[in-house]
Image 1 (cartoon, rainbow, N blue to C red):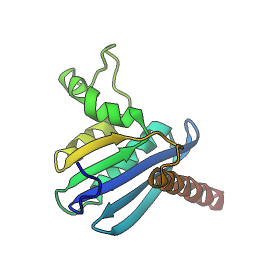
Image 2: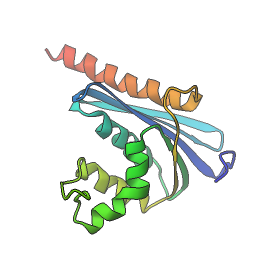
Image 3: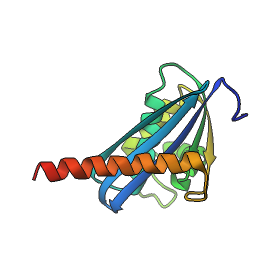
Length: 156
């Protein structure tokens, strides 16, 4: 897929967690035909991997119709999970090759459903390596953490 193709939705996602588990945030930058949209959120008690998955899920959920998508993540867990491991997990009733339950099964199932609606190219990008769009996704994920931290402090 050509990243300059105006018919392709480019998505950059990231997750962040202060403590693991701890307060977490997710963020996504979406770009289509010259338009950009930023989304972010978070959870009080979560893990980094859950936030990485949720970033991709929320980005795909925000698409209003089936699309060609180029989704960039710095999470090998997400990229390899959806591209390499998920078929075996499903074939073995959501068990790993070690016969243990797949962690974050709820989110993997949701992500799997969403991938059926779109033509997605999953791209891994090295985190914190100067990729401006990945850095923006990281900033959004950290805004999600800050938002949850602020909400948590107000409720105490």
